[in-house]
Image (tube, rainbow, N blue to C red):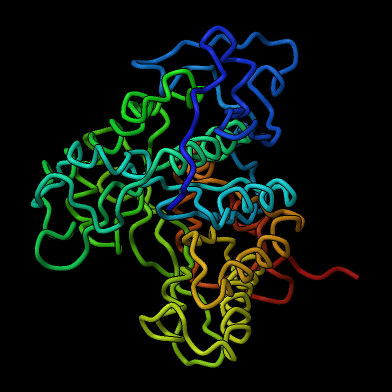
Length: 423
């Protein structure tokens, strides 16, 4: 997340903050032209946008999030929509500009996504000692910290993403994996401390950077933050307990088959899933990192001659998983990614092509985890329980209308108990 320029004093003052939530910030050497984004008042014509700054003004309450669909309960016999969730671990904007790129991809394909922000991406390097990671000395982080330019760029993308209906979750802070203080060894109380710090860095980025006149993030992070993915998918057991106590609604740190989700420790278990791995007899987790490890090993710069093949392999595996669910049990497809150019950026290409191919299809909803959790909460628990009886790729044998009608389907003619055939 390196950047050489320093942010100049923000030209936005608190009195004009509602008009500037699209993210305009002036920079040393000239104005930075920000991307357009619908503000709260634009998203709801005629509605007033009341902005209430929170704390030091790093965040603000601006009303209900724009562009969130109202969840509806399935009608009797109605086939479920095919949900697809694209999510990003450690979301931040750096010189690759992948955050801003995928915001555009999302908007162009009728999709919203979840961005799991690493809290230390809003903490400048010179303030690193403010982070006190569990089981590590102050100022330690396995993913580093940021500079003011990187923080300004990341805040701008977070602001725009939220105003477009996307979700801002958390990937926590220092990304410690494995033995020797990794997240898998943390207690419930240590997880709660890590979550508190992740929130605090978001709520105080202005104080920590000195960008006191910049526009705030347009949400209350205490209310916005309802879910997460743990580093390296470790430490889930104690995180679930901590998350439940702190009011989280879902977790996506597990591995599952393509079946309908239930709850663990009171949170929706929205785990990533196993999908076909073209050319192999085993299935693959729906995450770019795992495809990379099974293709080029732990190196992110494998044989350039194989980059296209590897990207196509990931794309086709995700598409096969999608089609299996779309034609089968309609279980939500959960996909995880990183803003990285591993193996020449081939996985970013693969994800983009999947978005373009599936998100505009009939009966498909590419949504954030928040939107999926909202929809699940709105359903009849008995219907969800019935959906969970369907196996991977299994469509109801007598069709959706019969399966979810709430009453037994009539027996086909010619079988015992069926009505007599009349000429």
